[in-house]
Structure formats: C-alpha cells, structure tokens
Length: 339
Figure 1 (tube, rainbow, N blue to C red):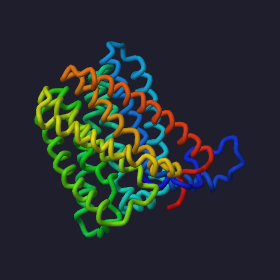
Figure 2 (figure 1 turned 45 degrees about the vertical axis):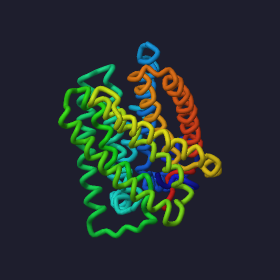
Figure 3 (figure 1 turned 135 degrees about the vertical axis):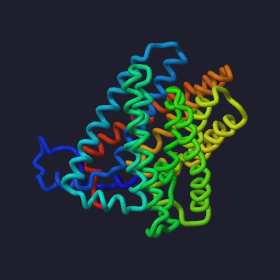
C-alpha cells in the first residue's frame, strides 16, 4: 500500500484554507488507488461485527451503522478516483505500470464483493447484485493483472511484497457469499483460483523475504496481508463444505501462525511512520476474527469464542486508530504526494 507516507497533500477540498487551487489539483493528481484498502478494512470490520452479533444473539444494529459508514467512504473514494481518472488519465496509466500500485486496482472490486457480502442480513437482492458486480469486475482485474505480470514487462524480486496477493488471491473472498446464494460451481471456481495462486505467491513472497533485501519500511505493514488468504480461505471453504475437516483446520491454524509471526514483528512495525500501508493491518485481522468466531461455532469451542472476542476488541482499536491517523494525515497534507 503505497505511498501515503511522508507526503504533502490531502485529497479533499481547500475550503476554509488559503491553499491555491493548483495545490488541490496536485493532490487529486496523486490520489493513490491504495485508498481503497480503507474500504476492505471497514467492510471486513462490518462483517466481523455481524459475526459477533450473531454469536451474541444481538440484532444487526451496530453492523448496519458500520455498513452505512463503509458505503459512504467507498462512494467518496470512488468519486475522487473517478475525477482523477477524468482529469489525469496519464496518472492512472502510471499507477497501472507501477509494480506495487497495480495490485491495488482490484482492491476496489474486493470492496464491492465485501459490501455485497455484508448486505446479506439486510437486503438479499442488493447483496446479490453488488456482490455479483464485484465478482465480475474482480475476475476481469485478475486476468488483467496476471496478463501484466507474465507479459513483456520486467519485474525484479525487489518489487514483490504481500500486496501482490490482492489481485489474484482476492478471488477467495467470492465464495463466502457465493455459497450462501447457492452458486456452488461459481464458488468453487473462485476458490480454486484464489487458493492455487495463494500457494504460488506465498512461495514467491517468502523467497523474496528470505533471500533478498528487506521490504522497504513503508511496505512492512503489508506483511499483515499474509494472514488474510488462509483466514478468508477457511471461512469460504467451511461455507462450501458445511463443516470443519482437516483441510479447514490447516487453513485456520496457518492464519494463526502468521498472526504470531506478525506479533513478533510489532516492535519493528511500531517504529514506522504513518502511511496508507497501515490499512493492511485491518482486513487480515478482521478475516481472522471472523474465522475464529466461525471455528468456535462449528466446534462449540468456548476458547475460540473468547479468542474471537479478544480479536474483535483488538480490531476495533486498530480501526479507530487507523481512522484517526488517516484523518490527521489528510488534514496535515501527509498523503497524495508525488512518488
């Protein structure tokens, strides 16, 4: 998640300030597609809240409010990015040719998939419609990014980082709602794509982490993305097969071990200045929280239920912290800076 690090610009208007119009236009020109990671994090938080409400037997009131917030954020980001595409199409092309930013184009379609999934308890027709659009767009995005990866463009090992999971492994999210809608063949198709490319990219990422230079500091938070594929894969797989079998356990506990690896890295991560890459902390943690609640439900494990509540509390603190730091960065013109 790129490059909202020590930048000098905010994506919003200059009302109430004496900033020249040119500066606002410059910030729009450099509005990063990595902002859509916010939608993934907030939608994941919404789904985790729905799962907690189900566990506690509560009405879906808090999750409905979170869903509304996520929709508003998505609409705002889509509006700004659409305006950027109209006014600065060369910057869209530049992001597409960037070895890291290319991975964040499908974050928008993942946001749609997650929003459609989260609408399930409130409107089945809206849920299917938005989920379907997101799934279709994400398949197109997957094919486009794969074509770029294996095409004429040259990539170096230094370009590889866990954000590369987003375009292709993101397919593993589709079956969560797909199985609920009874679209089992479609669900298995997306699951197959996501799980196979997870194994391929996980191997490549670990090769890069072990045998090449360390990740740049601003990309270190993307290590958290390692948690998401097995955690989401567990939720999707259990939804399709209806039970926890040995493969489901392997997926779940792979997510747990990756969390423990990240916990060991916390002292190093705590020294990093704020960047949009911090939003990488949100969705993977939400995915593991949901997976833990589901594991508790299927196995009737009180230990896992308590663990799920603990993870949800941590997730809440992380989301609140990210929202506060992002708002501060926008006000202080620390995002939307030239590369």
